[in-house]
Structure formats: C-alpha cells, structure tokens
Length: 283
Image (tube, rainbow, N blue to C red; front, side, top):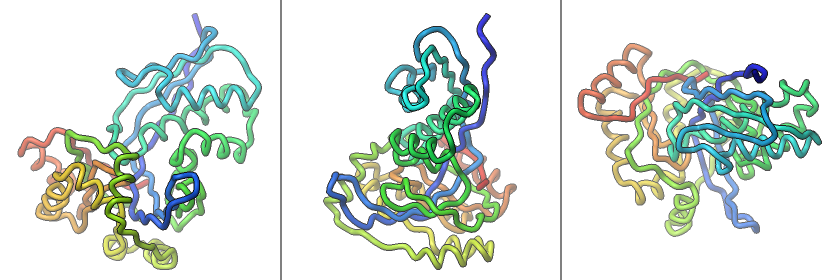
C-alpha cells in the first residue's frame, strides 16, 4: 500500500476588473486586474507514489495538465526525485476565464511543499508559480489582489465583502491566446484606478464594486462567442445588479442580491435549459 493522499481545495477566481495596458517585447500583454477568489473549487490530491509523475484528471489527464508541469518544476527546484501521483476532481469549467488549471497547479505546489516538509520558501513557491503560468501565483495566495505585469505581480487589496454570484458558461469556451489576438485586432484598451478599487473595497460597497466592473477582453471574446453578450443581459434581466465576463471568458458572472436570490436565478436558468450554472460567492 502507498502512502495516503494530502488533499486541498483549489479555488477558482474571477476578474472583477481587467484592463490591457500594452503589449510587451516578449509578445505577452501588460495588464491591470482586480482578481478575486470564489468558493467554486476543484479538489486536488497528491501523494508520493512509484517512480514517475502521474496526473489523473479525466480527459485532462497526463503531461499536458498544468498540475503535472507544476510537479515537475517543484521536484527540479527542490532537487528531489521519485514518483508523484496527482488526482484532480474537476468542478471548475475549462476555457471559462476562472483559472481552473492555474488553481490546480497552485494547489499541487502547495501540497508538494507540505508533503516534503517545506523545502521551498513562500517566495520560492511564488517564483515557481510564475514559471507555471500567469494566474498560478494569484491562486497560490488567493483573496482580493491588484495584479499587474502579465498578472504575476500582485499586491493585496482590502478584502472584498461577501458577494453572492451566479456563474453561467456557454457550451463554447474561449482560448486565451485567441481572445488576445482578437483584442489586438480591435485595439481598444483601458485603464483601471487602483485608488477607486481600494475605496470601494474598504467601504465594502457592493454597489460601488458593481459600478467599477470592467473587462477589456469582453468585446474580443464576444466576437469569438457572441452568446456571451446575451448571457450578460439574461443575468441582469433576472435581477442581478451587474454582470461581467471573467478573464478571457467564456463564463459570465452576475452579482445577485443575496444567496436566496442567487439560487432563484440559477433555478430559473436551469428551467430555461442552461446546462452550465453555478451558485457561488467571493471568499
């Protein structure tokens, strides 16, 4: 019998705001974003097992999974050898702008550091996270963060109040690279005010947060998956005080008027035949 698994939740994120501020020399885009953890999560399990890295995640199993890459980078950085088994129970949809893969990679790094008695410092883990992907560093820390650079430079913001959310996702996902290519064709960029966000969050004002919702990638992703626009309208028509596409899409979140209202909206959406609906909240 092998050793038992260590387990943790890998929480999704939404972007309460996202502005693209320029294109870098390496071809990536500079951005500003207000990133927020939500309760929707995958479950990640890790243990030492065998001689190789094995990552099981349904049709996302194998070396293409970001958690597999995270395990490889961890072993190399910590100068460790031996096999690792990773099991991921997926609940966060893919190609949704919710950082599901990044959350799994961050949880894998966290669990491996615990499993091997913390050979890496927090700073070393964050550096590793940056190598794995732009959102992994945020997922490692969670909460409410001001993100710049490619999304890897993070500064804590005042904690967001609890916001009850309804998430819906079209059948079609959005490939992040395609969204950015489409954005470059449209060429419409914006700017966020960190001061405005700090004020809204300090005041715990859901009304002010709703007014500041913003996403430069939304018009680009709507070109790729036009139904995103309709999903936003449906959420507002059902009483959500604001709606926005998260990240590069294709998921859309609506700010509900409390938990009961969120459940009512989700129930109505399911009655109308929507398949991908979640009730969640900020954490």
